[in-house]
Amino acid sequence: MKIGVLALQGAFIEHEMILKKLGCEVAEIRQLKDLTSIEGLVLPGGESTVQGQLLLKLGLLEPLKERITKGLPVLATCAGLILLAQQIETQNTNYLGTLPVTIRRNAFGRQISSFQANAAYQGLDTFPMTFIRAPYITKAADEVQILATVNDHIVAVQWHNQIGLAFHPELTDDTRIHEEFLKLSF
Ligand code: GLN
Image 1 (cartoon, rainbow, N blue to C red):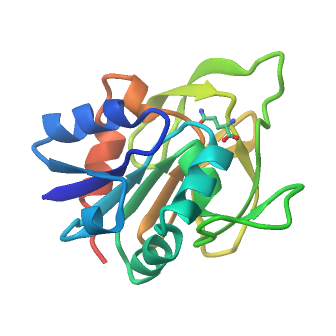
Image 2 (cartoon, rainbow, N blue to C red; image 1 turned 180 degrees about the horizontal axis):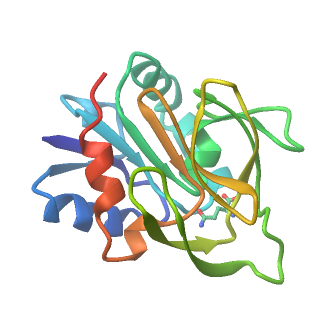
Image 3 (cartoon, rainbow, N blue to C red; image 1 turned 120 degrees about the vertical axis):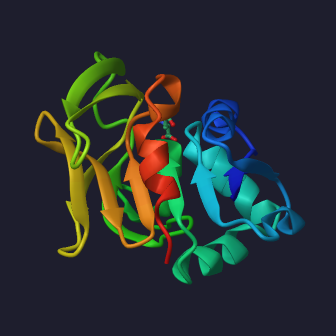
């Protein structure tokens, strides 16, 4: 199975390592031709403003949007989730905008900008979650499935082919969320 990992900026290598461990072929996505024959897409953490600008500049924004809308399975973590969100608080514009949620960037505040939590994740018992200047979801459309909350804030969702996480599963040895992602097909 060939999975594309957006490799413009941020924590993409860690995702690649997990995907390879799970037997996937990995394609680093930096230009349009890299999208050929991928069966899934990972949007890594990093800095969403930088990634968003690069997507636009490289002509990747619209093609990715189209593929995701047509059902390409996506696993988005942290900044990746911000790229997917239909609405970003305090911003008038979005990036891919394919996931019907509202997101608040750097939402956990400066004092606890990075932390770990072992929290319930739907279908997986608990999951070790690493948050780094993480966002959370403040509003989700009715059909969006909430997979995890931390301190009553939504930190993981699924909507059809899109899984969005506020935390970084690629920074732990726990591969279960990537395995769930690889089971998606639409
Ligand atoms: N704070 C970053 C942003 O707003 C996201 C942080 C992350 O991906 N770890 O894009």
